[in-house]
Image 1 (cartoon, rainbow over the protein chains, first blue to last red):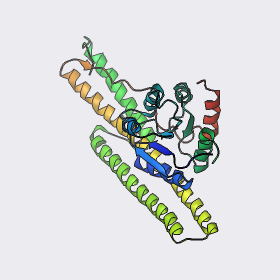
Image 2 (image 1 turned 180 degrees about the vertical axis):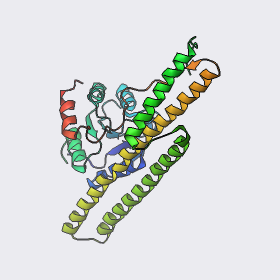
Image 3 (image 1 turned 180 degrees about the horizontal axis):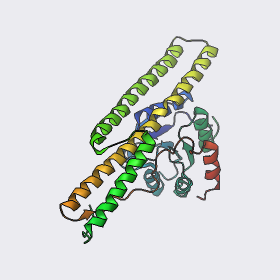
Image 4 (image 1 turned 30 degrees about the vertical axis):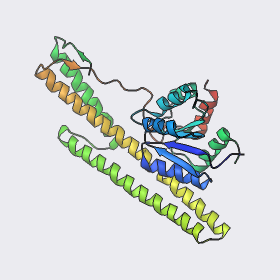
Length: 127
Length: 168
């Protein structure tokens, strides 16, 4: 059974998107949600907190979501953390590149709360 | 910035730069439905930045109120059926507000193109004054294209299909 007290990190350079994802996760019962505004900012948080899930946008600066994914997968302490990209980047080459780097799942914007829940279940298990 | 040696035939180079600028104007006009001229560019940039800022502020305000409604029901111990109904509506509000993220990304893309035009104009003026050669155009990440046009963008089912087929 999924532990809803797990630490989750959401990463996006748009405040409104961080607020939306945070709100939906809280409606689903998750409580400990941290936010970061770029891949670089996320990496700094990851150094100090053990996250059980990362939800990240792709198109951000400095360090975009794909670069963040590569860093997370490169490090033996973080490589097993499930990471879902939530992004407007939707060309086949984006999906291929993300999968090659070890993304756990891929959500295209705009998305529904049901889609987010479905992908969380796919990655974490039922809750 | 990487610089390359100024070629001898500057006139041909100037024409190529003009062609590039005209193409950019056409791209922006197609996206924004607004005809841009070099004189209107700084004003256009300010207008777009203002749109970005005000839509963000309004959207955050809507989201805060939606969250407040949800919290108020919980605090007042409203019945389960009412809470469920309201939560469903709050969820729809969250989903609808994601428009601001996509709008913001489209505006950022157009702002980037306006900036490119400014750079091309500067290069033209540098060529005309034979100043220091021509800087090479900064390399763009081919994976960063931003949101596709609504009628062309794939839906989540299309993405799921591609994701399942793609190799890890």
